[in-house]
Image 1 (cartoon, rainbow, N blue to C red):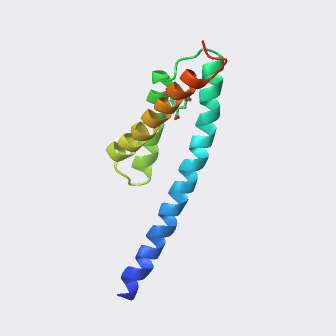
Image 2 (image 1 turned 180 degrees about the horizontal axis):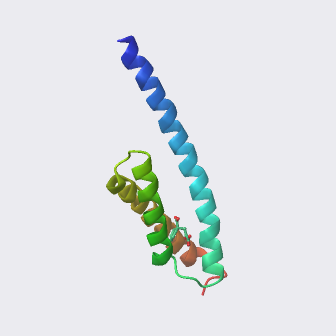
Length: 96
Ligand SMILES: O=C(O)C(=O)C[C@]1(C(=O)O)C=C[C@@H](O)C=C1
């Protein structure tokens, strides 16, 4: 069906955009991880995460996206970032 093909083509474009955005986000959090290891800061910052969740839930509501889903998505990404931060701390020569 032509309509299904068109819709799937748009889905593929958006999935590609998501992957590119996530790759850029992880490049930045990599640098944050090195900074945190160098300055002996904890991998996770629960206060910052609470602010991010609050902000994303509000954005999701405005955009008619399920805020629960937005929170789960952010938490999934941030938990992977924290795992990377912990690995950087283990490997980083400047870390204590
Ligand atoms: O902002 C930070 O301190 C980060 O390490 C980045 C980040 C994130 O991925 O947004 C990851 C872990 C923290 O708990 C909070 C936020």
